[in-house]
Image 1 (cartoon, each protein chain N blue to C red):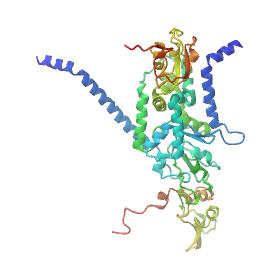
Image 2: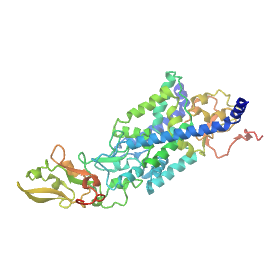
Image 3: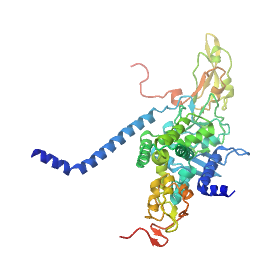
Image 4: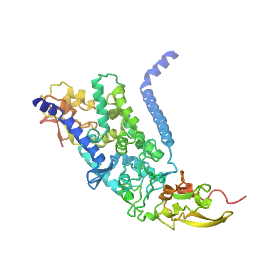
Length: 282
Length: 226
């Protein structure tokens, strides 16, 4: 019993994330006994209890493609954008996006099979793809990324049981297993790049709690899907993770055995470490 | 001496040269990838003629830009006729469509699909379903249509939701006698696809086509000989 408790505790963020992810998928896909669904639509644009939510990135492509502004979509975009702007953009990636299930599974398989091969890709690649998708939307008058976007593809496959795009999902899975560590989500996907830019100022942050609690084992960095975001914190150069790339997945918190990390809302600017300035002035 | 100068020049310049080389390389890559991407997008299958948009859809080009691929219209349809195009369907990925021959639009007076659209790709200005323009029915099979063979099948006329207006029987006389020919009034037909659905032939003799394809468009070439 204690072991079970310990296991649950050591995976508290992971399990919370999985529950939220699956609940979101179920809200779209599982029909209620009374008929209908909790959420209509898909992650492009959905209606939850009468409130419309719209993905700002897809909407932006539509705008570049030359669409007129629809009122409902505009309100939906504002709600979603403000949420991620305030809390942190890539919360979308690790708590909402269904592709995270696929790529996390890839990562797990990769670990189990002890695959070390890693084709190095630049983190800037996804930003370039983001720019490219907007440029192509402008040039072609259609939503460029939506032609292949695996997120909505996944939902369509699930809801209407088409399999034409299953090969896309399979290739993402295999790419992440065999080609590049965390290849898709951390290097290629422009949706993540967009949310990273959007949520640069997000205030939900992974934070170092007490000076001295961390003994520098760097286990958190090993499990982090975006390892560079934690480096300044472990090196005691910053009191919290400020990079927009942090997905707030909590893998570091699950991994840390010393309680040196916490995730909470912080409204401080930078550098305060329990009252002691960690970024030296000179 | 000359050698020395060129070596010196090479040492003095590399930083700037490197920057330029990097910029040009990236510009080159960006141009090539953009062209390739544009070509790929343009080569995606255009909407097939039997693929119809829900009522109120903007003209195809604007629709492709405005539709956000969310599927709210699909879920709003009480008859489940709409689908979102998957990768292999003959329409831009993720856009909603229906095929009249499989399942026609039932022309709900409250147009729930258009009301559900968050972006206006299905126009909120369409309030009267009889003004919808999903396409236009055209009797294409003059050799196969049973009415042309002298029978009075007329199923297409009898199932039309705008009965007697959008499609009606017009008598024409030929060597077999008087034929009752189903005739579409293109100004009344909404392109719902009900006639195509119920045509008794194994391939329908009457088909809903996009308006410009079904009716032709005036212009360009002068009429008659010249």
